[in-house]
Image (cartoon, rainbow, N blue to C red; front, side, top):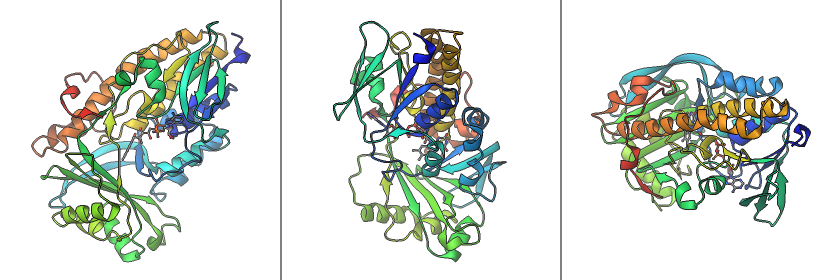
Length: 411
Ligand SMILES: Cc1cc2nc3c(=O)[nH]c(=O)nc-3n(C[C@H](O)[C@H](O)[C@H](O)COP(=O)(O)OP(=O)(O)OC[C@H]3O[C@@H](n4cnc5c(N)ncnc54)[C@H](O)[C@@H]3O)c2cc1C
């Protein structure tokens, strides 16, 4: 294949797909990015995410003018990129348990991060991948979409998230690609108090975010998400709140019923979590998050014509804040390989094999660790032994003594 013919099909315009295409575009490599939703941030799946150890990699991947916007999308733009101690508090008393150190990190809302990463890209919306086939000549791949269109390219990258369709083809069956549900009922809320005093009060002690752990196998989380009218207008501030507890995730309650349930649990919490949750306006929509995982394992990459990146390769529970950091790390490794193909220094099969040889064990280790961490943070007797207490936010390194297949049920 001539390198000028290189055409990469990317499925899914989450953050992983967007930054992959930013990197391809920067390298002058042709890409086609397809997203099943009809627009960016179409659905209400908003939350905030901490980027820490992968931030330098993100800087390398993105064009300079795109990365320059990152401080302005920070949840707490007053701090921007900063170092500090992430507070983990006793949810029942409000006392600080520990501060987890982080260096040069920042927390961003998913919607703004996606907007920033989509800058200057051509995203083809309303395109749901339904099938993948490989040219008989061995020279490429054809993606089929639910509207009947076919698109051919040199290779296909699955950045289609936890329930990846590309993973099904890569693994050879939907069963082998199926996620396991993490046994938790996890709720996410976007909250505006529309009240300056309340907004100031809930941020007084922990200005960006905190994680409150309760003896009742429950956690509560709050973060500032954005300040639409700036730091001097607390009445406009928007918060990301989450509450989760171990148990059945198949909760079919209405938004008001979930809100009442959460407020009932919040009544027993210490401050600031107690007020932060009890003050949530009645119109607050309590969304259920899909917390599931798949332990990364080798797949058939069809001689380098198909691979997985981001949550498609390693969906994991989010309670150690690692998912997006690994997505960025994946993209960084993958782009180096594809640029090597562009420059004629390697073949696609070599580049993809090298990428997967690094990424699959890393993903496997982190998914296993995040499952273990998620269980331990909801078991009061074990929280101090959990990976986030022991290892902080650093990526794992040789962690292998977990048996995550013993928890959860097939989704
Ligand atoms: C509550 C919560 C908190 C988190 N906090 C952190 C944190 O603090 N730090 C951290 O590092 N990570 C965190 N994460 C994890 C992080 O959000 C994810 O790892 C990351 O957003 C995954 O991005 P992605 O692009 O790989 O997948 P996704 O965001 O799932 O994007 C996949 C895209 O593919 C599209 N798609 C799916 N199927 C198809 C198809 N067949 N055809 C076309 N398009 C398709 C989807 O519509 C979607 O837009 C958190 C996650 C949650 C849920």
